[in-house]
Image 1 (cartoon, rainbow, N blue to C red):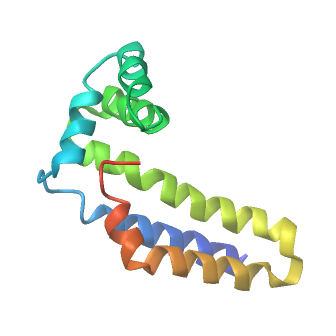
Image 2: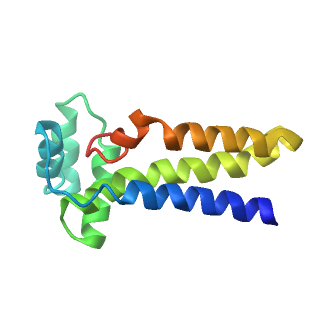
Image 3: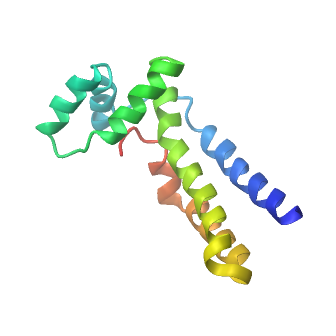
Length: 129
């Protein structure tokens, strides 16, 4: 279907757009904390987060990405972008079942809203949950 191809290309375009800003190694304090935390084992991450206000799930996801792709800032930034892109796909797919004939409009609105939101654009590449 042409409309499905349009949605896939739109979401992949956002993935590429977000991907263009991951290739710098500048970090602020909280992001450096994230990088240091994911150097630990999974059990140590759990211990660290037990005494912190942050839940461990993001650290686990970032840790898995670094185990698969190597320990670097761009890799952890990719780990921050992937959930945003998966959310776009999820909304697109689920809205077909939930909203019937209005699904394409709702999906397009949501994907454009979240993809073009300046806060999303900056927050999606930060190394924080």
